Image (cartoon, rainbow, N blue to C red; front, side, top):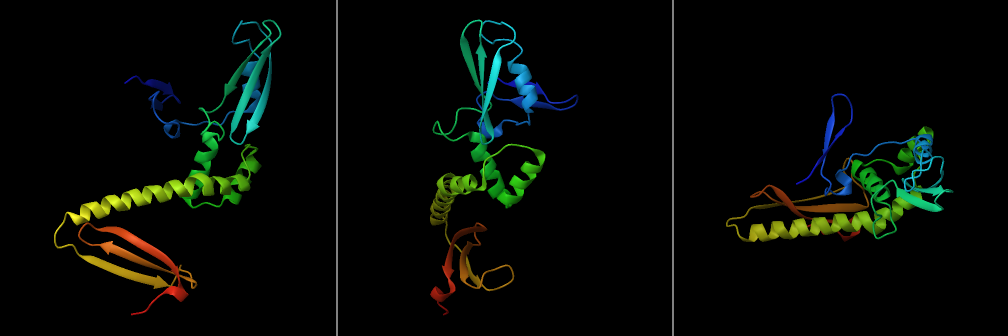
Length: 203
């Protein structure tokens, strides 16, 4: 397997696998002036000095178009790998996923970025990502994980189960209750249900 070693500092090295998925790559903050300075240094095709460069933003991703008056050609560079489905920048999806997994407030995260001057998408885009991509993937992962647990348990003998129902306690909602099934044989939660309190049956 071919790998590239990138020196991040005098003492820190990062080994990068060219075939690694985009979410495993290190990411950096790059200033606008530094990008323009790089792309106006010389034409990447004919090597003529002094080409022009325009920058277009799409959330966390930018597209730089370098135009050269000498060779009458242009070079297009994107700051991220090919977008998901050709439309959604990977950095945007990864940011939405990271915010959700951290349990952070998207409004607070965007406020931090605003104070720093770091360009990103809107809160509306975050919730669209959550609905269209992140939650369906999480649900699919849970259902696959759950199915594997059930298959494993069916092969065991003398399986022990415990169950619990909770609502309107500390940190919980008075409107909804959650029932959990826990297999003590393998020490895993196998199933849970979130229902309204009016649907809860007390036996």
